[in-house]
Image (cartoon, helix red, strand yellow):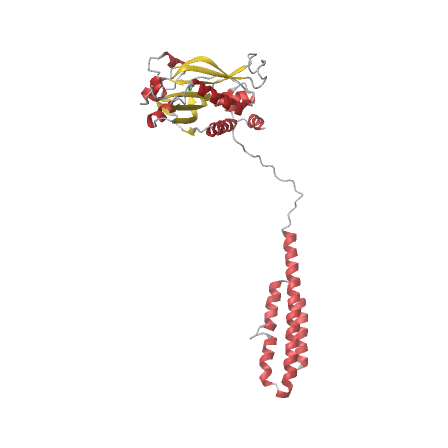
Length: 341
Ligand code: PHE
């Protein structure tokens, strides 16, 4: 009997030499140790055919073989798995010294950056955003803004008409009317958007971006406008920047002003950017004309307001020292990357 056990042990030792994978070890192990069909398992079943006086020895021998086989094959399985893992590591190895492929990162266009910056500043002052439409009626773009059909101020803006009634808005001021028609004061809105004029040279483009501001409430004056603008230029051009108002004319504001800020390049002493004047024109503004308030059903005896309109491309050109507006529209990555630096 012991010879039989020894034979099985040898069979395991020799057979194990042939095994190459943990899967094979598993199958091999089953062949011997499976409770019902395994060779060692079957030896246990033989017990009943063994003479009673030999049973104790027999059982002990089988059990020792079983413990040995479990141990031997368990160890083999552990070794095999370690080898397989090592093989996987080798085959899936990543060469971390390889230079990475360069990918270029996109970023926001300078116009979008300035637009977002301005929105942030004004949102911080409590302005809400109103986005109007690019196609407007003549009424909203001109007539309601106190610029009737034959008004000479219409010549200030060369308009793209789509029909006698419809046009591409020439100014975000059209949004003022929509807001005031729908809402009674207090009103505090900011309206960014594209505007269109038949105008094309180094500093003008047929499409450009404006940002309109409108504040209407009881007791609003030109001083409120100036106070707000002072805050605004400090935030965008630096703490030492000052503003000045010059008389101007817009049909929808009375009085109307052109707003300059002290040159942020030379600090006011005079340079190329400010053409030696020390001042840079940044926007148009004024006290909302009573006629415009009345056109929108707002009582001008009770309420007053101010409005301003900023050109975003102009702001970008000043900020980045660009002398040709086309650079902002040509999507030349060489230029845009410099502006983002
Ligand atoms: N809409 C004017 C323009 O496009 C700017 C402006 C806005 C002036 C609001 C006064 C008040 O030139």
